[in-house]
Length: 293
Image (tube, rainbow, N blue to C red; front, side, top):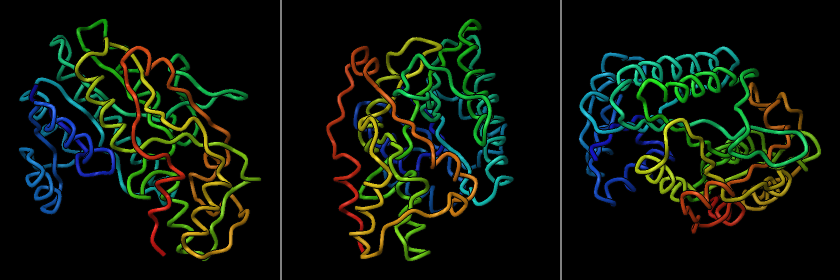
């Protein structure tokens, strides 16, 4: 299968590109910079120059391919306005890709976060939230899946709060960045709230499996660790960076603060049973031991 991939140089995307190329697929990858283009070409992908806001370029990439994996998302999360802009840009891109593929039966796999459900681990059957800081993302993904009735094989892989590789990535990575910046390995609330996690290389396998075989309109959970206590995550970060560990105001984490403070474990039991997905790489707490002072 010739697969068009956006976001192919990120923590998840670089792993997905390698997974596809290593399993008999070819890749056409969107690149917005010379550095990204070089990295993608070195990995073995063909490059299509443009960025997520270039809707005509996105349509061209989809038209040239047998399927799409949409992973690109803005890099600026420093303010509520910047986060809202990133969500809006992703939503427009996803709508354009979906419209290009309507009636073709070709697959498109998009990404979202696992939902949170008070008092229990969320499952694949739970709807995505349509409000809050990233509610627009939930609405755009749901709209894509609803196009199954119009001949679109759209699927969503829901990612946990931390997708990690070599101690970097996701919400845990943001905690590391904040600790380096402030001198404290901090966490919001009492630290008992739980975040799910997955190694990027395990997540990449799931993206491939969903692309190859999942039915239209379905959602899947790339969850390896159902929920690590944020205080435990911060404790490893503090030890690796030789910094004190403690509670800090959630406002310290900008627009993600309210999300950071939530208990949000998630299950992948259905995904594992239905698709035969089996995570094999290190857990988050193990992987954080790779953090260098």
